[in-house]
Length: 418
Image (tube, rainbow, N blue to C red):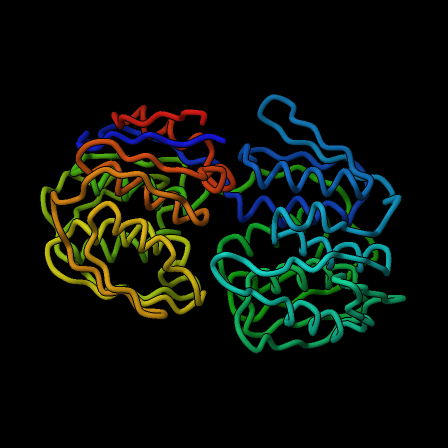
């Protein structure tokens, strides 16, 4: 099992590029199940979660292949409509095969994804939405068993905003008979990217990127070619990496608008930026003040950047209050940051962070989830001495060769095997 060694005290400077967005690629790859033939994608990140998705698609009759910078999915008729527990347990996003299978074949058997380190994330709204489209659903022996002779369009109002639920219903509705209207839908850029690929396949969708999405069902979809959007969470992580070390870093091949909630908070803290068409530069700053932050669905501050922002606040001047409204258990990184010397008082969904500039010291720490692992690496960049981050397989689920990107900017980071 690999670990990461971070030697702190080295200012980052230079230019770095983001990879494709994992959270956009996963639903788009599952959308291929809606149309037989060869789908071709560019800018797919090489990550553990992509490997898990490919494994599940293969079990459903697809052939997947990396071809230089392209990722190809050749969809054939599924020999089985069952997504087995052994595969689904590796990645919660596997539930996103439910909508496409049900819409295309009228049947799907998908293992329940179970709990999660950062929260329960139940799939009730996914299932309620499928029932609204006419599906019969039973939960048996840990599996979702869904059937529908033909899905029929309907109006469905999400009780709470859910990205995965919106994605599943959006895909299913494309082949439903009639019109489907999704209200209180998620507005994340990854939803827009999925809708754009479905439109490229021949779907009729409008309103994506707003809280009301309208889908006119069609009889058939066709394979297409598509470039996955840049990863906004990786972009934000790299911006914070430059900022926390007091360096000047340009992050390119990204969409500045996607991380405005972060850059605005950082401006309040005293950072200066240059915003380009597809780049953001954070300038050197030797001291920044603490600024409160609350996570919320897009376009507000993303929960996936909360841990990284907390690392930045841990070395700020003053005290900040960080409130987590999306997941109920997303402060597990707090104890590990405290091992490095951070002064944080966590409550259930609120953490009080008392900044300690220049006071963090390297120590062995353990990653508890994907974004927590990134926050520990960021803190290690400014901690004196050596920080050893264990269980970085979490990091590999969502960051493509992060240690290479940080090293190219001047960080002293290396991967070691236990």
